[in-house]
Image 1 (tube, helix red, strand yellow):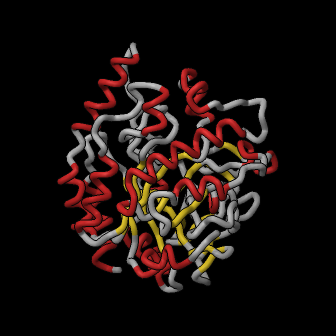
Image 2 (image 1 turned 180 degrees about the vertical axis):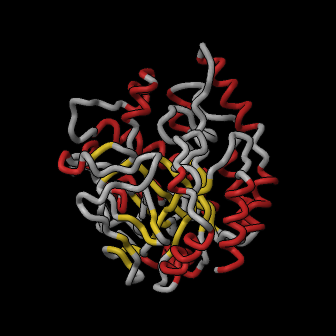
Length: 344
């Protein structure tokens, strides 16, 4: 069950930083893809990246172990025992965790809560994770994925302060998954880990937590306007309901206003019992190789306004910056982060 004490450090901080560092290996053979994975991770300049943390003053950092490419940063006992070459030899994620600890700061990991796209893109993973489209409960998958979570959590131990779990969507879970089982696995290495299971949050016009295990609101954001969060019932151009089919974010600009636009500013420290929190991409929509979206290139002033609006009520904001495969944040984006750090 949720315990707000687990996330008080986030409430007391200024802001956090996240990057979507997702590797989709290139190669004709499994060996070539594994080589690409390892070379990419090995070329990540962690010292340069930590200088970004130092320069902007972010109080916590959230990093991706994997999403749905079928490849993972850092060894995992469960995955490695079932399939070879899908985890990197370098444990970059744990390196980040230790660097943040050296600075007296906090570290969170990002993982998906399902592997539907993962398995569809990598058919060999169906047997590893036992994803079964015909089973609404996905019981076999959940047992396997629990072990993946547990392996990472126990390896990181208290070096990891929290987990942000993506893709916990109703069209996958059918409201039948037991989130407490995943929560226990994620906290097995550190009982004080703060958790957030995300079903889309602000992106789907929701102010409710999918699980009582959420210590902080996942707060996934698609768009902001004038420093306020747009409560858009739409994610990446795919309508969650037919009636909203014309209500979408486009590369050219903000959503049409046919159904009205709600702009959210927090008025409480909590959202549905969990710490008020927003995860906000800027300059690029999550990853630097995503479709470039000019409307998301917010000026620093708007980011500062947004962060302050959450800080003023005791909530928190994590800003998601673009990043290259070499681990570089573009200068324009870095300058915005530094400005936020100076002004908050």
